[in-house]
Amino acid sequence: VRLGVDIGGTKTDAVAVDSTGVTTQRVRLVTGFGSREVVETAIAAILKIADLSGVDPGGFESIGIGIPGMVDSAAGYVRHAVNLGVDGLNLGDAIAERLGVGVRVENDVSAAALGAYYGLGLTSSMAYLNVGTGLAAGLVINGELWRGARGAAGEIGHIPVDPNGALCGCGQRGCLETVASGSGVARVWTSADQYPVRALFEAADAGDTRAREIRAKLAGGVAAAIRVLVLNADVETVVIGGGLSHLGERLLGDVLDVLSSWSATSPFVASLELASRVQLVPNDFPAAAVGAALVGGTLSGVA
Amino acid sequence: VRLGVDIGGTKTDAVAVDSTGVTTQRVRLVTGFGSREVVETAIAAILKIADLSGVDPGGFESIGIGIPGMVDSAAGYVRHAVNLGVDGLNLGDAIAERLGVGVRVENDVSAAALGAYYGLGLTSSMAYLNVGTGLAAGLVINGELWRGARGAAGEIGHIPVDPNGALCGCGQRGCLETVASGSGVARVWTSADQYPVRALFEAADAGDTRAREIRAKLAGGVAAAIRVLVLNADVETVVIGGGLSHLGERLLGDVLDVLSSWSATSPFVASLELASRVQLVPNDFPAAAVGAALVGGTLSGVA
Image 1 (cartoon, rainbow over the protein chains, first blue to last red):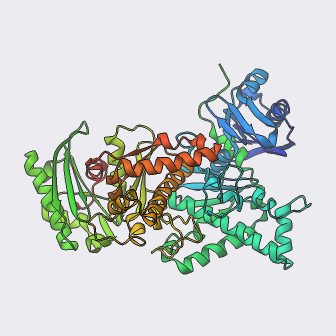
Image 2 (cartoon, rainbow over the protein chains, first blue to last red):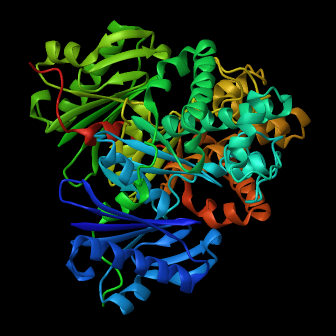
């Protein structure tokens, strides 16, 4: 049995996954803010799954943790996990010290890519397109995570596609993320709703012209991200995940409409058959936690 | 000893490569136009290398052929090699019938990627960015060609990056290829010179304002292609090849200037260290022929 933890900005998911890939236990905790609280949350999640599984933390085949930010998997080190209040943290060492077990630390989008790949039973290549506060993808090629030569694979949110687009936080202009993300929407659509993009969709449905424009731009950006992924790595499948994937068929329908309109004007785009290669991550499937459990491999944090 | 042939629009290169990867023989022929002449050119190249090497065509460990167009490597079939006057051709079968040997047929940019990877002694991941009449890349990941799930990997020339850009032959607008290719330049800069892009550079050097603008756009497009490759597959090295790579340091210098200007305004782009990851394919290195020799693997065309 393997154990996986996904430390998100508000919630932490943890699962136990058996040797056939089936999730046998699952818990959800509120994520603490700051390095110390993040470590405590991870430890609480591990102990809870261990308790439910009836084994000690040391009894799992592997323990993996997915977390946002820049992750050095070999060292178990996390940088710039802004939403968690973590600037620099050796999560691997911190957990090893407390629990006496080694853990594998992985970027959450990469972990989710692996989890979705196995969870959906895919067998070829795949990109997991995380449409959340930001926009990034995880790539699975030949059944393995491709992190890139320097860990930047899938950072497609910062590919500029419009010289006259909005200035991005990265210092460039017109990045995909400026339209195809929650932060991109928030910059042009102010909402007090807990789920501002859902509120945007509802305003668009109610006929608000500006909401319709912003919603169309969001769909166009997600579609452009899918095109970028296929025209570069040519992955067989693009799975849409992340916070905005909870919009479900409404988001997917918009995106498929854009892909369809492109195919109508470009035989080349039509030949890529993009629409048939896109799917949503199943609602409530804890892709990153399952992926963290499966990422296994070498463990960090144990001397 | 392996034998590789690169069938180009005007010239066909062929090489013999020994077990250590060293090119032991090399010939260059004029490429015939049309399916029948292309087959004759390939056969002449194979026989010439066989003669120089002192072995029969059947005596090579493998024979590979790189050719433009859509290539089905398993079947040895080539489609849409427009510059060669080839619409559909089973090159593998045609050569097997005449010479009694199996050959591996590969897209020329993919072959060049593999040739450059080994020829330059690279060991991580690499993209071979072919800047020629069109714009496309070949990807080498974990030491192997990554052709993609459906053979479209590296088709980055058709990623749109400017909603107000020129209409591309593919039916989309503002594709990278509309600025970063020979055909992209030809559409806005008419020249009777045999090498129109070289003529463009000379006009720009002589102070022609319009030539300067077009040259700057070309460099910006090549730089954007490099950024796309790194932000998607995160290859360690991008090798610039193709017809326009013969502009050498003049093209590379322009591109490095663009990358440098981006780094000045974006710490994110600066962190990618793009400039240090780019190099030109060595002048006169027959990357596609060497790659075709090395691509080996399963042979097609022998029943």
